[in-house]
Length: 383
Image (cartoon, rainbow, N blue to C red; front, side, top):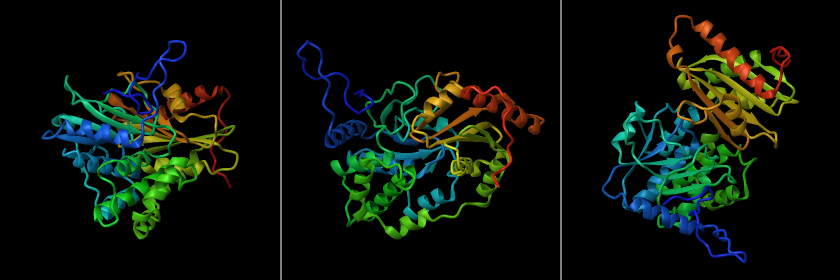
């Protein structure tokens, strides 16, 4: 069944006074939960995967785990899989401390062994090679969809700060509510609360629905575990990436951007931390930090506190689309990111020349998007 971005079935409703179709009433959480479980129950005895795209973060990890619980309530087996490494120490600590049941596929084509894919905290399926890819069973996300979502169940709500909020509501309204007397419930509640906290900048950007979900989860959350996860130290590698960003930063009005060179896969999240750090500079409301990750693709993080900047639209306009028509970048309120494969240029004979070409090209795209023609200001760090 195909649904709209608000999670409502397309069409329906009665006729208005002028013979036009009246808009459908918003679906309730209970109705959404019933619809999702009905869809999942149709896959009993078949192999499903709930897929985490990109580097797993607290929000996507918690959502995948919640989705697995809902699938189990529908009598369906659903494995949690991811492709990229869990790079940030606090995210690895989350998986270990909360015992998140997750496994990594070394090759994205491994999802072709499943009979259906469920997407959480993202709406686009991984690029596959065979003609008949597994169907998309469900999508639950809080990011704007970059293209039409084709799934039997879809709930995309951009008004919330975290997809964990949506799953907390589905669990509460469905046949598998979290219980205080169950160990998995307490661990999953802690994961969902952590997902909401991290995706709303410790609730500073939380919506009313995010705060209500946190209140509902609070009685089940393990405060010691949540505190431990929130207090993880910043790694030395991430600190070095922040240092490189400060040394290379260029300023155009209220926009700051920096290239940080080559970054190991396991240190990739340092790029996002650097973008967060630059946003704290006085007079800056938007930042972009980028580097070459694992020698194979350009990876960038975008942050903004401006009420007029849409990260997803900004990145799409700046960097365009891939050969399949999907944008290289995407985002949500205040945050975004992009990845551009180096393809045949990866592993070339002159890494320094490749970085220089990459840096100049990305900076050209940034400045073109900003409408800036004059040479950039110096990149010295603030005193």
